[in-house]
Amino acid sequence: MISYKTPQADLENKRGLFFEIGLAVALLSIFLVFQIKRPLRTTTLDFDYGELNIIQEEMIQTHQPTTPPPPKQPRQQITLLTVVDNTEEVETEIHIQAEIDQKTEIPEYIPVERPPEEEAIIEPEIFLIVEEQPEFPGGEAARRAYFAENIHYPQEAREMGIQGTVYVGFVVEPDGSVSQVKVLRGIGGGCDEEAIRVVKNMPPWKPGKQRNIPVRVRFTIPVRFTLL
Image 1 (spheres, rainbow, N blue to C red):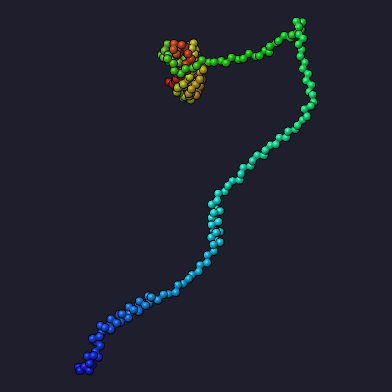
Image 2: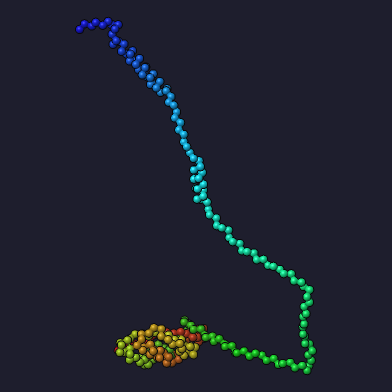
């Protein structure tokens, strides 16, 4: 192919120069764009300080402590003094009988009789544990023989089939006699009454002693009722 262009008219050799010029123009345009200053916008805010004060006052009022009313003071009593004219004479008559001689009769003094005071009865102390315990005359074997010979089985208990042990409490006096007999635990059917009867009829015991002195001692014995 035949080329009709001259070497001076060929732009292909100047392509690098044109590229540099275009790049410089683009950078200059961007720089100018950033240098343009935009107008500042002013915004006006309407704020009511009165509402803020109201809110603060309300908050302060909610936290204020309530003070109690002052106590009522009692009324002071006023005493009125009346001034009296102290010019009146007061007559005071005192009668004194001092003319007493040997012939004057003096009435005889009669003392007032008072009813005799009842003396408080002080019962001796009842011991539960002593150095020497009370003992049935003849010992334990004699006591069992006494109950076996003197107990009569009640008819009511026999018919109802009641049997068991009645615990009787009593006090052995210093002279060996028995007092304050009572049932501590019974079984009924007439057995309680029979046990009390037999205990009250016991012969005098050998009294208990504390420091070798006879004393009152509380004692408990079982009375057995057994059907044969």
